[in-house]
Amino acid sequence: MEVQVFGTQKNQDTRKALRFFSERRIRVHFVDLKERAASRGELTRFVQKFGVGALIDKDSARYRDLGLGVVRYSDERWLDCLCDEPLVLRQPLTRFGAKLTIGYADADWKAWIEAERKA
Image (cartoon, rainbow, N blue to C red):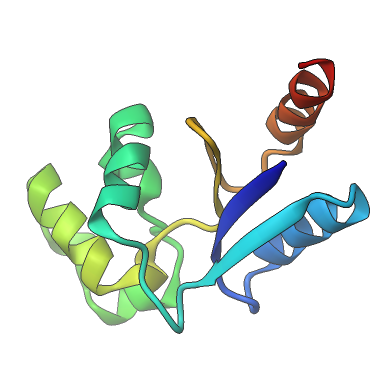
């Protein structure tokens, strides 16, 4: 079992997610959004499941710095913005196969692990 986690080391929920998986000895492919943005294809998976609004962290400093609180973008334009400015994303974005979560979602992750062990 290997999960993919998108986030930054400074984000508390991302650190908690990494610790959650490491405590359970599950391999993690960590993508640091400060070094490399998530691809448009990856973000599209999350948008299809949750909608673009769920991916936007309206409390982030980057969101405020860019003045995004007053803009009215289409979903397509927001997706472009999230690709260009990954620090506006809610963190962590977690993926295991086709299963996705946004933010700290330990209940979902436990269900993934349980289902994987039964398989």
